[in-house]
Image (cartoon, rainbow, N blue to C red):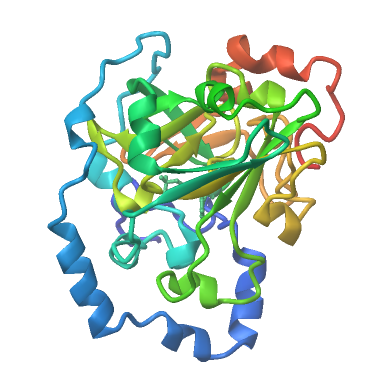
Length: 324
Ligand SMILES: Nc1nc2c(c(=O)[nH]1)N[C@H]1C(S)=C(S)[C@@H](COP(=O)(O)O)O[C@H]1N2
Ligand SMILES: [Mo]
């Protein structure tokens, strides 16, 4: 009897349980104030249109040469679909954040590297990017909400940033932090989220060749909604680990606690490797909707990247490797 027609990439609600479901109830309790806070002002709109005219200072580095090591088992998701279906809670809790995300100011952009390093530094994004050799990689991306995409990222391995940072032997984890600017990002005015967005990797994960810092996608500098100007891509882990718009890398001895982990430790564990055999506490992870195709496919262990990353987790089987 269901006669509602959907485009392939619009997942029926029953299949796509959003990361934030639990918190929506609290949003409702908070009343209309949050809805008002989300309305963009005229000044912001003006600023956005001015910025849109600014050329990207690294545009000449694109497209970068593709590294053919990482092959896809499906076509690359059309950019128009990918660019209009995003999780970026700083700009709203729906998938439709593309307009709101245009308020993100991506220059000047300073990246801080600190914690257990020989010498803490701050570096401008353009200088950092030019110190690295950009390459293109095609990766799958699997969101814990049970949808997936395939993307051509441009960027450099996290391992190169680690080399550049010169961490001390005592560093066990890499903690990453997104910008914090509630004036620019209306989602950050919603105080029930413990902003800023934080994520972390163990040093073994961070230095695995698959761990990638993306500065662009689809052959050009990154669109704002994808987490410009610097965003993590760890394709064997659930999407929420791939933190966007990073401003700080901190090497730590203590395991960092991600924003989602702080909110719901039982659902968004530190390790959170893609595993079809272990259900999220509220839904199965056995299959995924391939955005843009209407197709459902079986989800693969480590999202199909086991040959590169399984060794990292030897001996951790059955532990908190999946859902904390
Ligand atoms: N700072 C920040 N990073 C984030 C998110 C976010 O809300 N804020 N969402 C995460 C989630 S849940 C997913 S699935 C991916 C989505 O990336 P995409 O919009 O480029 O597909 O970004 C991740 N990184
Ligand atoms: Mo996600």
